[in-house]
Length: 82
Length: 324
Image (cartoon, each protein chain N blue to C red):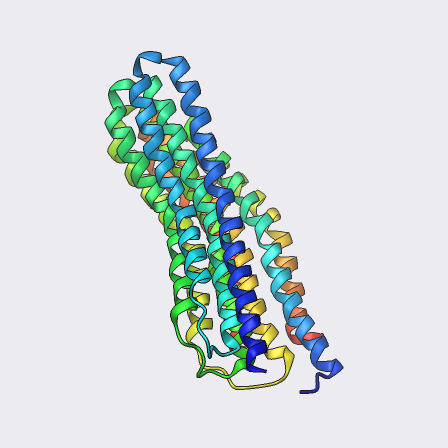
């Protein structure tokens, strides 16, 4: 079987898409979990401020999520555009 | 040519077995070491309860050991399952099985060590809660073992299922991907669940009357933490049993391999992160059970956000399998 250059390029793009999304998902998952853990602790200490604490948690997590979304974008680009 | 393939199958058997046992030994050793270290600290704190703590340490270590025993079993099976007239696809199935069980045992070994350590510490602190602590430790570390059991199941399917009727390309990549998906994905949830179980033991030691409540919340938190491990298992099953169009091109094969790697790696982060969240929730419910509703709600919202990157990985894996 003859392996063509274009085929190798496509294979590399697919492999890259998987690795990009896979590795990129580790950091946000751990980081958002830490944010949520501290939010729970803070609510446990001071339940009256639950609303404020939840809001801060969500904003912080949204920012943490950004790198996961970058990975998603790159892997979609590798899959469908490149 | 047939001789050649038999040699390569032998190479795959031995490589798979060594990867399975080598990687699989890491986690259990770390977890058991952590348990033993903490047990010693606990005994020095409360020497009268030394016997009880020692016994609990051994039980906890035995559970953590099981992941390494799974690896040993797979390594043994791999070493002795070569038969003449095997097809080339078997090479990849054996390699996949070894990688799957090797990676899959790391997390459960480390994860099951946490509740063991925490239960020993709790016994020194609150000796009358000893029995409850052992029960909570066993439940928690059993849940933490589940992902290594998934890896065991996938590894056994890879070894014993007959894939020779399927086209060699791209099935070789699908089998390797199936092993990597469940194997790597097992890492995160197992560690996360171990952390939750440790918090449960700590909470029972702090406040023994909250044992039932804390155990229930532990199970809820662990169930959510498990989800990304289940995605990994699901992707493996799709890769194992979907029928593929035969092709000589590299790209479709690499798409399947990549799907497995993507889901496997993508499950690590959310698993650990959701574990952190549930751990804090459980330990604060033991201290302050009046705000339980708020804590559980925040835990679930936080875990849902933390899950998102795991879901992205799942989506990318499904696109790689079904769309590409």
